[in-house]
Length: 430
Image (cartoon, rainbow, N blue to C red; front, side, top):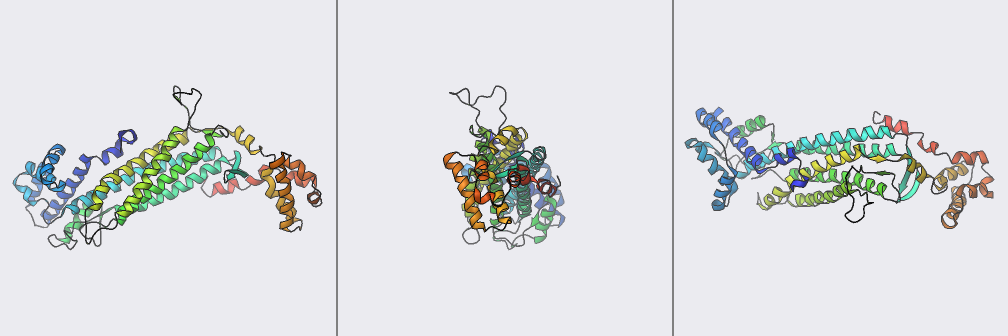
C-alpha cells in the first residue's frame, strides 16, 4: 500500500523488517523447544538467541543468487550466528516458518483493526444518541418513504459495525494458528512436540493437519472479512455522499479552514474523504477474489499463492485500518442539519403519510384494494398536477365517508411514526 494510505502501526506490522523478525522469532522458538527436548545443545540455543540477526539488504543480495528468500534469510542469519547456525531450521521447511510468521502478522493486524472498529462503533453510538429524536425522511429506491430519525440511521450503522467486529474476531481466531510439521505435514523430520511448544510460546494454536502449508481457506476468511468490513464503510460513506448532494444537503463532511474543494470552482465543498473510502473498498473486494483463488493449490502445495499474499495481506489490512480511522473522524465531525431534514420531510406535501391514511380507511372495514385506489389517486394528483395531497384527501368523498377531519389530521402527524424509537434504542442499551 502506498504511504499516503498507511498508518504507522499497521505499516510497521507489514514491513519487510517485521516480517523477517517474525520469521526469526519462529526459528528461535523452534531452537528453544529443540534444546528443551535435548535435540540440540542448550548453549547453542542461547547463542542463537544472542547472535541471531539479519540485514534486509544482505538478504536481497543473497537472494539475487539463490532466488529463494528463506534460504537467503537463513544464510544471512548464519553469517551472524556462526557454527551453531547448523541447528537453525532443523527439520523444518520454508512454509513452516513463513506461514507461522504470517499468521502472527494477520493475528496482530486483526487486533489493530478490532481496536479501530470498536472506536468507530462508540462514535456512531454517541452520535446516534445525539440525533435519537431528530426527524428525517426515510428513503426507499431514493424516493421519500416515511419519517424516521437520523439517530436510527447512525444506530443501524453501529449495529453493522458490531457484526463486523464479530467477523474480525472470528477471523482472528481462524488465523491464530501455527504449523511446524515439515515438507508435507507428516512431521517426518521434526517432533510434533516442538510444534506444540512453539505455538504456546507464540500464542498460536497448532493446526490439526496441514500439507506443506497451512490451508488457505483461513487466509481467505481473513481477507474476505476485511472486504465485508470495507463494504460496510463504503455503505456509510455513500450515504454521507448522497446526503451532502447540493439538492439534499442534510449532512456533510466537515470542511476545515483553508480547505479547497476545487482548483477551478471556489464554491465547492466536496465529500472527498467519503469518495476515497468508496474507492478503497473496491480494492479490498478485489483482493477478496484473489484470496479465494488462493485456496486451490496443486497436490500438497504449489507457490502460486505466495506472490498474491505478499500484496493482498498487507494491502487489505492497511487499507481497512486507514479507512476505518478516516470514517471515524468523518462521523465524529459530521455536520448535520436538522432544519433541512425537517424541510425535506415536508417537501412532498404530505405524500409520506399515505400508508397511514390507507390503513385508517381499512380499519373502518373498507377492502384494502379499494382504499389503496382512493389514496393513490390523490397521491398521483400531487405527483402529476402539484395539488396539495392533504387537501385532496380532505375533499375525496370516498375517504371522507369513513374518516373525519380530526382523524385525517391525526394521520398527518410524523410523531406517530417515531413512537417506537426509544424501544429500538433500548435494544442497544441506549
